[in-house]
Image 1: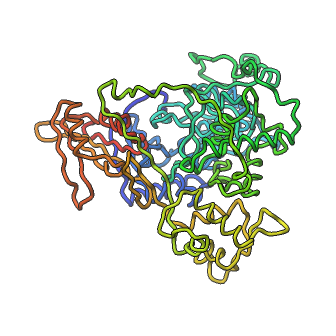
Image 2: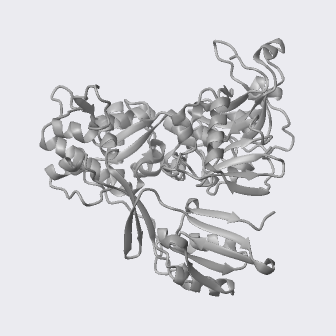
Image 3: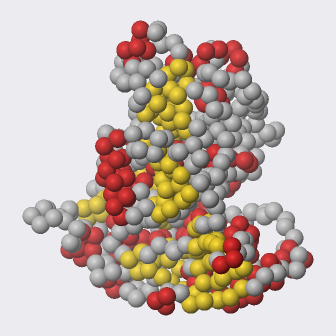
Length: 611
């Protein structure tokens, strides 16, 4: 359905009534969905738009640009979640498990799923009816890769000897609907350009440091409903050791009738290649020595590469982008050889010890690092190693060479302000209640109070005993009347509970100018419309959110596009907008990204001139 790329015929924002209708439709259609799940996929305070495509398909997207649901006939009967929605709530749909990751090559190549390619559980084939929406998953990876509708019921499938087509695929990872989101986002490190394998954060250790180091992350998460991990799959190469992973012969290991309509698909070479020369194996190290090496790499990362503005961060991103690059030169870091065996268990142990604050995302089944306790003895006593950095010539600014004004670095940081709930804690440790704090700094203050008041439980160092002040700070007003207040809390939950009682803000810094605003970042809106005489006019507003001077931008655009520009004040003193003669919507968006550092997810585009 989305194999070919095509533009929507029309796009509009949903009204309040239509939003409620969409939520009711989703709740009626998907039995496994809860109100909390719907809020996660379609955040209540987030704008939702609907796009109508030439094939009559309706696509519902949130304001950050992520498509969440699509309606095949436009009547709400055949409505499906996208992979972006399923990455938020993986259990939204029942899922068929593939026999292996290599089968995913064909599914994400556009082929329908055949029964011989499905791994049948020991308890037998699950019950389903024809025409039901189902998802597709890969063993060892919780994130679905495709959605579709069943072609027959489970009883008919058994009568047919589990042969034939099981699922008619309507949408899959890497089709044009997935590709419509800027940045080519993926949920974890198991998603590659032509295949989906097990999640390295769950299998832990299948990737070498160099290959993991090429990955880059998503958004924490982003609080408008697309929290999760992302990576640039275009630069990812999987590397595995041949002496631990068997050679996979696609033609031999996969039956011919596993997939259908595979003509024209290009098969790449083996997914596993030999690790680079000179890499030292860890066979000679004991689990205790591996544990010590892991801890050293984590502390090195916390001191050198992981900044407070990076938090919260998925565990797999922490592993690939921060821990692995801090390994000793020439060493393969394999968490399977540690006593923890899994990344999640290792990070949970560090959270229990109070070094970090981490919590498992119940929907993504992945641990998230929320904060770092930089007052912890392990952190303060560690001395990071000085490492050689890559030699880069910073003497020449490419903007100056190309005749453009030098860029002013833009920085967005989530910060927190003490509320009436936590003010006594801040006053007790001598911190200002009117200042702003990063997640890490706020968590440090909570642990500092615990240390000052000696609240760590003597018989269990991972438990904090709540005194009256700390108990009120965390739970007063949040516990129903008549319920008993807790008397203790686990160290790993203290940071998250403390942050939830503070006021969330965001800090915007450009050059020497800094401003703090309450709540989430507002987007830049770019709109092209027709005026009298069928002339096009492009309008851009919301510039103040990113400390962009409208007058200066208007002057730049006048020279860049050789057209007239004006600046007008928006009604209600809501800022200014820049009006540019002509339909320059794409070029204007690119200019904001390249010259002002505005991330694409913060730019909202609407072209009213398209029919």
